[in-house]
Length: 321
Image 1 (cartoon, rainbow, N blue to C red):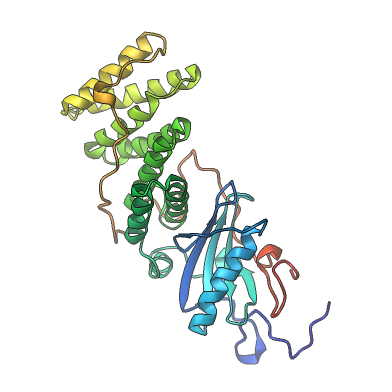
Image 2: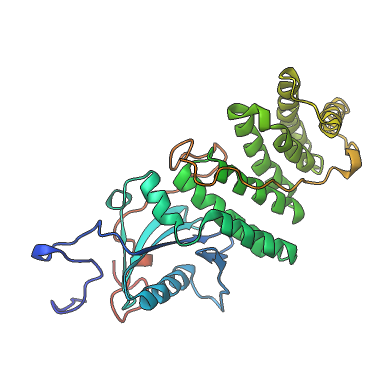
């Protein structure tokens, strides 16, 4: 269908009526779609009614911000159902378009600061904790996953806040009984910590060990256990295996592996320890924006003209490319 020349275009126009792709919106939000379709916008889990597609729910939610502000709003969407990032611009009339990554602010501190201004990461951690305290573990876990995904995209996997979010996600997976996911997440934190900050690694290795002690799959017990044992040995060689509880965990790993992976009673129940308060707020990203951990499935980069996130004024999502 052809649009008349008088129709509003979702692309901002500058002098000469040329698109201004890099015009910065006043507010930047983020959104996340989990593999199961759970959808988060700016740290809030949306209540999805019926079979409403996540992309439409995201556009509607962001459009409400734009209408309230009377100005364009940006949203960075991580969609794990299609393994892609979308950078969306939504306008007060409900229209929207997508841009390529290179059309946005350059990656780095300026973009990160702009994207985190509306809802700072530590405030989001508090929201996750509140859901967990109310035993709303699904909501807490999805919000933690969304936070970790966006922090990793902006700051890199080795940034202190990214590590803290991943540790929280691992702990919530443990509470939900998903020990395979918990050990995967916790081992990533422990692996990075052992490499970049060994002095602080012991509590993270302990959390990974707590999840490993709940595993039942023999192959994972052996593979993960050998890696944990090497970490405990590295800590011991550095004179950092100081806590009696950590010494007991190291012995438990060694003993279980020696017994062929059979379960060994963890000392004092060995709960998955909740992570401490993040220490890295405001730090410059350590590993560079977008640097992933090896376990993270890569996302296809944002591009222009993504049909799912394009709306013309007065039309529903997906009707224009």
